[in-house]
Amino acid sequence: MKEICKQCHGKVWVDDHFVKYDRMNVEYNEVYFMPAKKKLDELYEKGLLDKTKFFDEELEIEYYELWHHEGRRARFGAAMMAPDYAWWHGFYECKKRYNSFMEKAGDLIEHNKKAYKADPFPNATGNTTRPAVVFDKYK
Image 1 (spheres, rainbow, N blue to C red):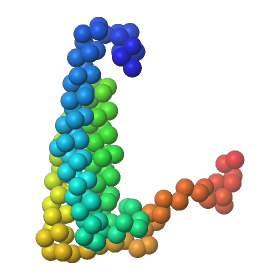
Image 2 (tube, rainbow, N blue to C red):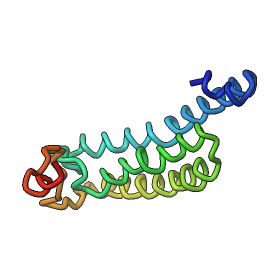
Image 3 (cartoon, helix red, strand yellow):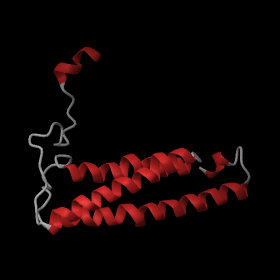
Image 4 (spheres, helix red, strand yellow):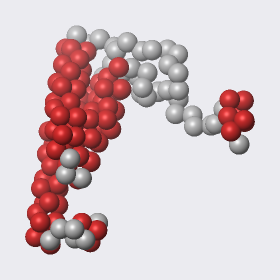
């Protein structure tokens, strides 16, 4: 990847960019991902979230979006030198979602209360079988 960057940028600039990018990934992992994952695991351990399906409880969605939605934008924004995405659409949104996730998770733990489970929740099974009836005309 560095070789592609060096087609336009000098070696020192490229090396410096990747040092900063690596530090940003470590910060994301330590500040947001690992504490949120620890809290999610605690909710599963205590039976306050149901582990049978993913995405059928709000905190599972919040956790996923912290990692994939805002977290991905922050990481990719930093990788591609897009500060607006790295900060406003990334880390700023990470901070908001992380605080919300931790507050809701802490409340469930403090009150030993099971999370509301949307049942049935469409497509929460992880089944990726293509529905034949709907897509036959696109073959």
